[in-house]
Image (cartoon, rainbow, N blue to C red; front, side):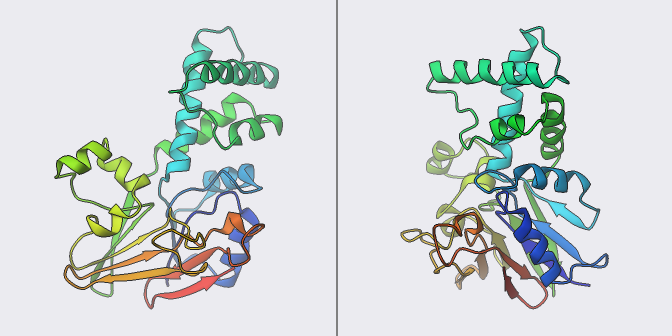
Length: 262
């Protein structure tokens, strides 16, 4: 019975399946997924179908790309109320998408389908009704998950964990703790965390030169001795494997901190 954490799958469904085979994931194990299931990779529909049928021993946490998907669908829903459309009809779904795209094109403040995933799904034959069901599932995902591992608190979050935004700088930068959980990068390591704990996150690819967590595509590990916080970044940029030779999918086993790669 082991606990594993994986993050930033980004539509790399085949790599996920290979990882589950590699770690021999079974009914007695627990898998915690730290968000960003879709966008950028080749099999977004397969990933969305997978999260819908994930068993009870798979814990799904929300990432910023998953949140974007929810916001995209909510924006389309608002537009749909003003139009006489059948959400079960593919043709009407395409009309709805085009209407939303035109609206976003006229307003620079509206961010809509920035990775093209919604359009990809619709062109693959999925209706607004199906998209809404996926979005509803994501809306019920928590922003972080905590557990005790070998007598030490372990927190799994997409980007960074913080108990409260307690400075003017943080309040100006992040509208809420939830935004910090999904979008923090360097802040997650310098002002985030919890004393005497282990924080496991993704979000910042370790395969990207110039990023503070760069580690040539391997899991990034940092220990804050003063606060006794052990940080891990396990986003090894799987979706970039076509352009970066060291990009891969990573998974960490919590009990002994062994890392697996695909």
